[in-house]
Image (cartoon, rainbow, N blue to C red; front, side, top):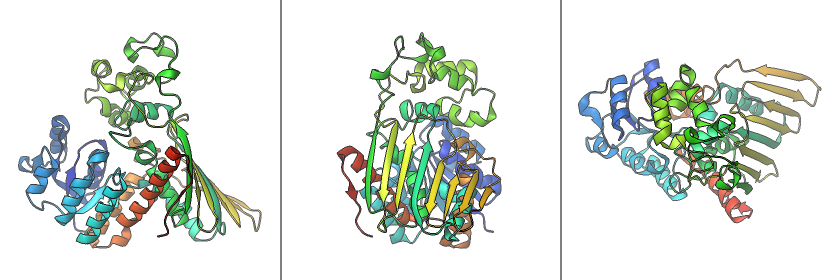
Length: 418
């Protein structure tokens, strides 16, 4: 198979993950990169052996040098997706675009239009569609093993420490600088549910709030930073405990530790906690995104779906119950229980995966499978190898935006018929 050349736009943790997979398999090779952070830019250039003349501080510089690769991985911050995607699509690059597609409907529509106008392949990184678990689960539905799908109950357990890391202290803590949490975190899940049903819902309602990670919930004695806090040792959200415990653990060195510092020593971590955002008390940050939310969906044929996203869980695989006319499926990311109403028989299906649910574990194998599919699709010219295109991603994003509108306004939102 022809090796695909890649331009890496954004060499943060997500961009690194996809680029590493491409080069590890030999199916892709990074030949140009753009990254504003000098430390990450230099490290990525060394790791991927990108020649100095193809290393840029900004994506506009990369684009100004003409077409340098077959495809681009765009893994910039959420609000910086639209301009590079449209510009590079207009130059003929195929695009792997980190989720969310964009932070506003109008910008996502512009991206979809650019993909269509230029007849390129554009895959948003909805990695849950690509996991071995999803492949088996979707196959059971498509094979009519539980009859008509009537209702789904789905839980996304964000994890107490992950909420604190990414959505209280981290880059995704505010709607005005990133996006609502339902988009930045759970567009994975909404897209996945739409994929299982095979269509978008017609009516949506939603409730959720920022309830705990705020000044009003601060326990007596809490300090401004974990290193200066009298109750740090008993706090479940202690940054000192979380990040120092990552030292020496290869599974946590890349993420979450590298998000706060590249100096993986005790002094390096403590210095980052003294001066950086990840050392702040979770009750004294400038966050405003929700820490729990529920979404209720009704489909045109009367089928329903309930989705819960919560910080107040362990960080683990999603849990889903699918209720059909002829059977029942209960899945937890690694196993699926199938009950056949026609025979009363029960079957346990083991997906035989040891991959964890976090970004450090490649989202249950989804990161690797997505990258592999994207590279095969480009090398062979076969877009059917991708499990969604720009139009499908725009449709599932619109479900997210409708749910957030329902939450903010306290209304039931009806989506237009497609």
